[in-house]
Image 1: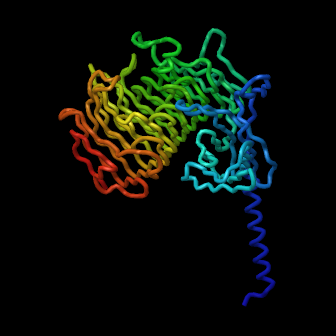
Image 2 (image 1 turned 60 degrees about the horizontal axis):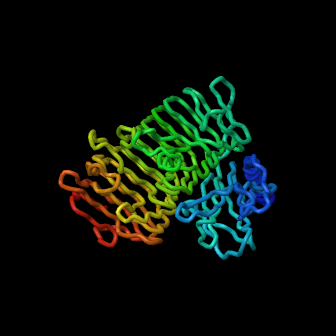
Image 3 (image 1 turned 120 degrees about the vertical axis):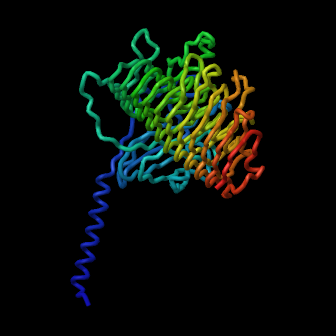
Length: 502
């Protein structure tokens, strides 16, 4: 038997080791909060006292045993169908951080934290909710199921400070920034790196037309931009200020190559958040966006190749991701588009959409597209023929082929379908039927079955414009795996071949 002295010695060593381990982790923990450069305005008679801050919540954060720090509660407008003010808070951290969320008005009985994949359990004490995070996440905190007045939490990873020296470095420090006199947008040159501080607010969009090797980094804001980038000046497009919302972008990338955008948050632009046009070699990482206007898509890709998108959060009032061929004065194929590790919330329209626009005279293709590890929190598409969380409507001679949807989690539909793969030709945007849809795979797809939804739809147009090679591999709706063509889950229209269910 081991003497008591040695037992006590071993026990003490173990305790000291555990304490040292915990202390090391506590020392490693770090929290960075961000100020906001606008002062609070109190104007007598205003129905909204502060346009930029939302008082619905008081949110604080701290590292273990640290002091609580107040976060700025941004006001973000959501849902074009029924515009409402939701809330956003932002911070960066390392290690473990605790949040305290106090609801300012009214009582509540339950709280949901989405996406569910993060397995974050809230703790309720009185009128305050506590959460603990140990890794970066973009979250929605919802009280009693209220998704219009919810709290969005963007908890980013703490990064190493970047070197800012050199002639090709452009910096935007804390404060409000407007374009130079005579310009409605910010423009940059090839080879430049732009650093946007987390306490910087840009009041206009960014135009990257005809440039190459441009990098934009930082956790700053583009907030309610007064100037945005026209996606087209085609003569047949109505270029009046109101109509041009359907064809404008906060960040416009056109005829460009080797563009990297990382970390920005876009709040309530008049149109598309990021528009990519006739460009190649685009990387978009950790971009977040909110919109509440008509045709206010998240990220649109027109006639681009080699686009990598990851870790984005899009709550927008039209399609979250849209892939298109020829439209306006834009021409060319869409190839090699990868979207991974992202979150979609379409208050209007689709999460993932492609195929609607194309070139009837010189047919184009959309091919080699991957959507992987995507959380879809909500969709609401009220037009039955276009409904689909994942929708391909091949139109205007476009052929869509080799598309993979992998590890997609759908939480709720206000109205819609899980998927819709159809060749069409009689829409208001149609100049000719689509060329066909080929080799589309849905793998590891889960939909909770919550909300109002109809059966998914697969249909070709005629014998020369078919849908071929659709694979449903481990697709679940409401906890049940699709084993066969059940009309209540999937409907087959005409001109469809080679559908496989696994």
